[in-house]
Every structure is written in structure tokens, then in C-alpha cells.
Length: 189
Image (tube, rainbow, N blue to C red):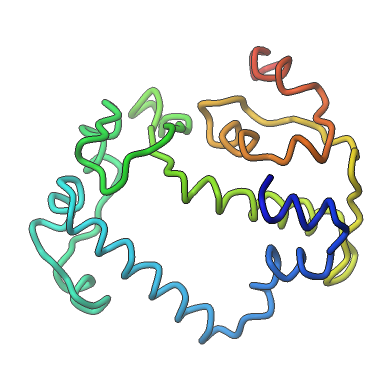
């Protein structure tokens, strides 16, 4: 059970809110400092893999400013030869699964993206934040309780929303319809 699920189960709502939704209290400067740190982490990972080296045209930026100067803007088309084939050997980290979005204007039937273990861990915090924000009337309010019923109205895996249900805290809530049924239904239903 995740830290978030454990806090929810124990009724430690204030701590859980802070963990999942505390970012709303960050100043713009704090938020940007975090974003810069995360971007630099990603750049370090990308320097060490084939996909990153190709995307950055061999540049090895040491700062965000260098990144902006040296690396051209890219689109999915720049990554498509690797991602559409789901090539793990060119990525900075091995994905634990692949998710897809619908294609863009018929350009691709699907747009595939790798998902790492770290991303899945972070998605659970996002899911809790989404549930809290969608059900609260004020900051810090958590209106959900164990065994509440939650409507599963999202596209199934391998779509992005289906990936989210893989980390949804099933042990705390009841999905309607149950995940086993909803994942075999055509999305149109």
C-alpha cells in the first residue's frame, strides 16, 4: 500500500492533503525552482541515452540557458521512429509499461509514450489530488471516505487514463463498473 493510501486509511487527512495538494501554497519562485531542478534532472538522464542525444543534436547543456540556446524545439515526429516501435534501448530508463494517446489529425494511429516506475508513483499523488479537488469546497477539505464508489468513466489501458487506474487505490474505493469489467468494454460503451 502506498504512503498516500496508508494516510487515507488512517484518517490522516491533513497530512495527506499537504502531501498531495500542498503545491497550491507554493510561491511562484518556489514552484519555478522545483521546475528548474526537475528539468535539470531530465537533461542529465537524456544526455546518457540515444534518444536524448539525438533530440539534443549531440549537445550536452549544463544549464537551462544552454539548453535553450543549443537544443531546437522538437515535436512528436522527432521521437516517433523510436516511440512508435516502443524501443526501450534508446531511453534513459526502462519503462514498466507503455501508454498511448489517440493520434494527432490522423498523422499516427497512436502516439506511444513510455511510463517508468517513478512516474507511476507520482501519478498516485496526482490521482488523490484530483479526487480531493473535485470534491472539496475549501482548501484542506477531504470529503471522500473508505469504500466510496467511484465512477470509472475513462478509456482503458493502454490509453493514458487507463494507466492512471493501474495506480488507483483500489483497496480504498469501489470502482463502478469494476475494473475487470470496464477494461474489457469498448470505450464507446
